[in-house]
Length: 153
Image (tube, rainbow, N blue to C red; front, side, top):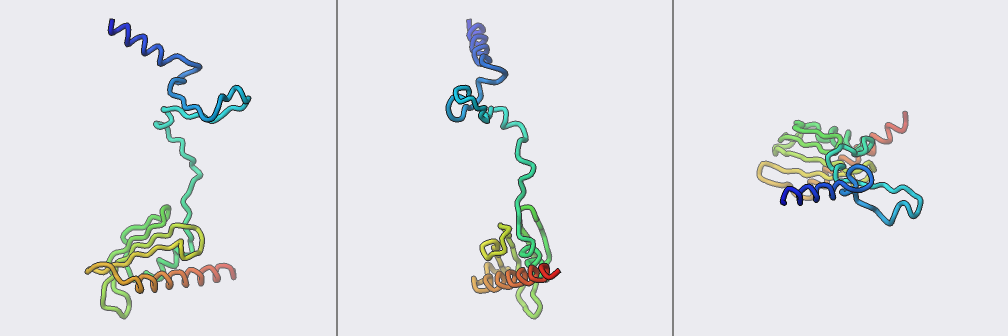
């Protein structure tokens, strides 16, 4: 008897129009009533790689290059241009005695202050917000200089 019940449930789960109709998610009303075909997803779409291959994360190249230029005294530990992250090791600025470490996050393609996030730290902890702001201003100023120089070509 339990075998018959399992077989009946298995057959009921397989019924429908076409393969896998049991797991289909219907969006909106009835597609046949309007005459339009709607996009539908199945549970099997979780196991396929159907992401848009043309989707890219964009970062502003002027801010990116300016950050590398302004903080060139710091050794680079990790760089990910696709997500816009630059991680540096500890380094001492020219004329300074205190080693710094930086994490730079360029998160937008616009040449704007909101596109840049800088985190500075010393071996004893984070630095003052004024120092971080000064470094961000230096990076943004250099980025604007690079853009002006690029537009003159």
